[in-house]
Length: 109
Image 1: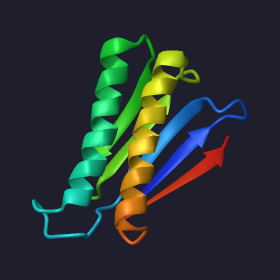
Image 2: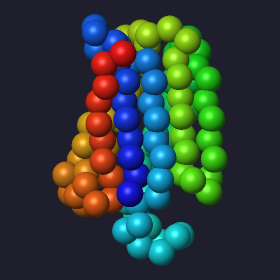
Image 3: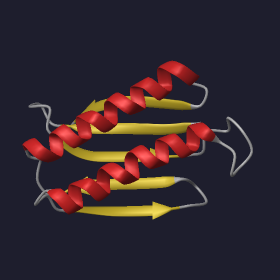
């Protein structure tokens, strides 16, 4: 299962995104759930880096499926919109395939 935790402050601004694990929906290389989650998260981070002034630190590790991103400051409007879109997609994946494969949680920090 891919565990995705979204950390936001009391104002709802994004502070951190932590993803770890593999979906286990199908064999590696054929797992559409794992691919969908990876594409959403990585493309969102690439878009934030390319189209906003937001800065963040990231750590990835393919074997464990780790993608851990910490924003230096709470995300501004544009980054927030991109991250809201990512969360919408992640919620849709969870709704369609179930929490056995991806689980999205939120924490206030």
